[in-house]
Image (cartoon, rainbow, N blue to C red):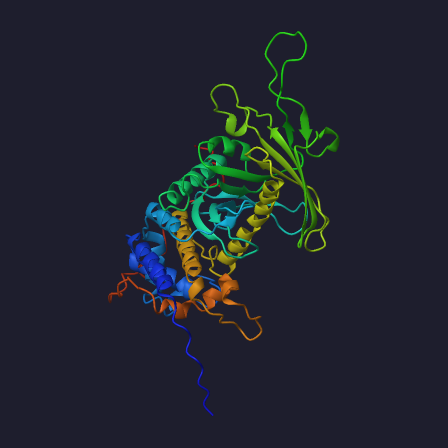
Length: 474
């Protein structure tokens, strides 16, 4: 008995054309070893198994060259990152609807580490802060930290639109690098008409490791609103007000103290909200307006000319009824670079957008476990940067292929509708989609391997042991 299955519907032409246009423009960003780099990116996206090393990628059908060409492309290829950053911002950028019914872009910034503790000859390694399982088990491990910027989607989702990545050097000012990175992303989003004059400010959510107050001061001229988590031991101050008494001298700059860990120092809140959520139960927030920290001459303000500024923002305290995994809820404190709005729904929108920041952790896990971002044992940090950008392009192609994908699952996997396909499910069927797309890379040319090292002669040039962190000679 022969069963005739219905033919799958034809994919929308505009979705195929958009993905073809992205692939063609990406190929134009590749200069040296461009054909090999393009095929390597396709191989990463089309492979149905987790990437474990570079050599086995050369055995896939999408890679028509040998493993020598693959390593040569990673180590000696070239891609124009400036054009590639502009290309990443040209694609569809997800937006999230705010309480007033208007859409806005929400960006998440975070650092993910490529740990290389055993690569003693690799330069430019820094001490990366890692968080193993268990409280108080944090370690500093040598590696390459990378700062990512991604646009978030509505609701709990494992998809994010990666827009930019930069490697942090040991002697970099992380706050200044993040400010430059966000400024560059906004400069690319504006010509692409993703953000226009009169639109809502772009929300940028960050974790507690960032100096959000100084970052707000560096980005004061941009239409952005920063939301960052605060450590519970932080201290803020209210406006100073007028001088008390007939004393002479310099007027006060800082008012009453707000110690986050001491409820007795908390003044009357300017905004109080209460809402019920399905995941966290009853959630209550209190907002204190015009709060600023007392800045010191250390850290990023060491080279500041003149008097240190007063940077005011809103301190938001959040308490929830429960947390997933039977964890005991603790208060969460946020600092927002904008004043308290009149509508309490905006305050609830702030903390709900901060919760969406954790979607970026799912992206990091997919990049590392499925696409094999940190699997190659590369020595040169420039090659690591090149490989990182290829991983971002492969992830972006999977994102653009979401409307074209069908659920190709294993027998023990739960069926998912097309709109709920995860990155791993889209990658499982991307090889079928890739066959109908444009392939601008040229065919490989027949070559012969170069002369090898003479038999019996070892490598006489030993690699130098590189210091970790800041160079003491610099």
